[in-house]
Image 1 (cartoon, rainbow, N blue to C red):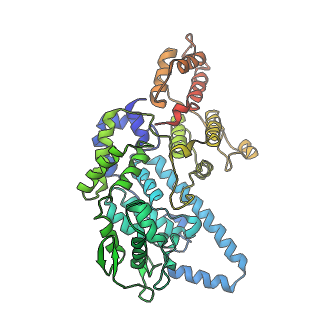
Image 2: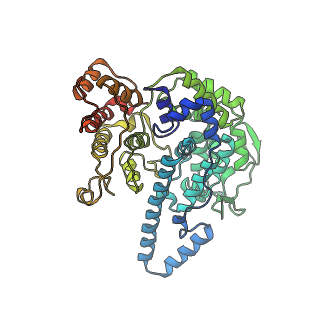
Length: 458
């Protein structure tokens, strides 16, 4: 696979940025990516959703006084808003000139998990998403503090139930286990005492806030330090630990480049991350520029977004209703804002079960044929009423081997002799590039390529 196409996929969701990477070089492309602007204005679909704890309380009061059906309707309405929010985010992924910020936001969203299914307040989920977007290239310690003190997080990890004399350890445990240090780098006493420091941190107007009635102000010992600590204090202590950089460095390598990065690589980049005081931008720059030089491919299975958004981009298809893509991602086990548990999407081999592979082949057939994605992918009657897509696969004229080579170069990390022969059986030696059906034949070749195991990898 062409190196620029490979890194366009790794730093985004399609081949769209390959030309820019080739023209500007990886360093300058990263500079533009880090400087990419983002919209801070709240989307209009959230206008009627509650935005503060006070509004939530008023809604609860009104539901108690009215028919219970009103509450059910409210839940349905917020579920529809949640789907709109997924579509809104997918559009950002597809439209951004430099999509690395959105890809990093998705990374953070899978690290600091807080799902709509449990939070049930779209605005709080959106707030956390915006925190992650705004701080995507900032400081890991800072983003941890902001995520932990978001309404979405304290609701999702039950810190609303964490009170003096009735300690709930969920947030304190995951802060150590999943967000920062990883298993084996703390004790059960650290979990209990960290949870004490978080006691009383509950829902607030714009972010979580401590409530004096429920705070635990005892002196505690946490990771070897003794004192009266709150959320920011224990996070500062966590980032003083030897193993603070390694869990997140491993996850960044897994998200962008390697499903199974070596421990040597994790420690190498982790030590650098500590050296730059947990600043994300220099870490990403170092990882991407050094790994770019290695010219390796086929080390990571594409997630559903990378797979389907690349397909759509290659075929130059318009998908006006992005909600259908959100549903496809969900079918592929990548439901935005709704990970299966606090650990997030597992990634790696979980992206390519036999069922998921079959679904990918089916959507490849669907898109290559120009048939529309229906609101439900198996709703054939709905599809029949929808207008077909105009498929416009770009390819440069040449003989059969030249065309096979150009498509392989941007789609596949490897082509063995047997696969090459299969391609030449589709695009034969006497292929006429000017024939009326030339586009259809090349499209058939493309469809064959994107169904191969090699296309599933980057």
